[in-house]
Amino acid sequence: MPEQALGSVPRHVAIVMDGNGRWAKKRHMPRFVGHKQGVDTVLKTVRACADRGIEYLTVFAFSSENWKRPHEEVSGLMELMLVAASKYLGRLAEDGVRIRIIGDRSHLSDKLRGAWNEAESRTRHNNRITLSVAFNYGGRWDIVQACRQAIRDGVPEHELDEARLGRYMALNYAPDPDLFIRTGGEVRISNFLLWQTAYAELFFTPCLWPEFDATELDAALTAYARRDRRFGMVKDAQSDGAQH
Ligand code: IPE
Ligand code: IPE
Ligand code: MG
Image (cartoon, rainbow, N blue to C red; front, top):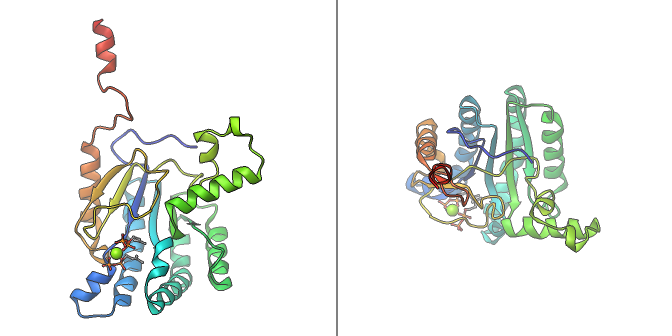
């Protein structure tokens, strides 16, 4: 697994894109309009992240729990994913974006699975930035599916440690997120990357996702650059050691 970023630009940014519904409501429009606008924000954000040297962007598009929403909203989101895949794939591919989809694909339509397979295979050699879209994803689901795969592979109990299990997690091709952003004002994880965010820096903003832009991204990056990441260590251990 690649090393985590210690410098001031995060290698991996993960975003809970929340607030689409409220954005639409404020404008007296159906929630779906907010979701549609949210897709455009993803496109702009991928570019902005790539321009700033961020290597991995992972966005939460549909959670395991979002099935509990009204049927029309769920089917609208499925349809939107399909449309977005065909509408934007060319542009993302040209921009050097490698696309990965993480989440449980088992109960999704063949059409959607087909579109994603195409997006992943068409962009697999791109290396400007990796965009991972978490769809029908849950952090708990991820841990359980990793355990199941390890058992299926016959990994002996005494060999199963964090590194080994980590290789079965959905984001096994990426370093752990350095910066976790949530828009929309809620201060919670909502079952996003539970395993992978063990040491991520958290940033919460009231900005609704459709309004998220380069200025908001830079505010999060500035806050991140000021954080003191210790990973459980004592910051001035070296100078302490020198004194004694
Ligand atoms: C996030 O926006 C997008 C999805 C969960 C699909 P919301 O739809 O949760 O928007 P709010 O939180 O109701 O404003
Ligand atoms: C989290 O947002 C999921 C996504 C952004 C896809 P929610 O709107 O579903 O989260 P809760 O219900 O407020 O926790
Ligand atoms: Mg929400």
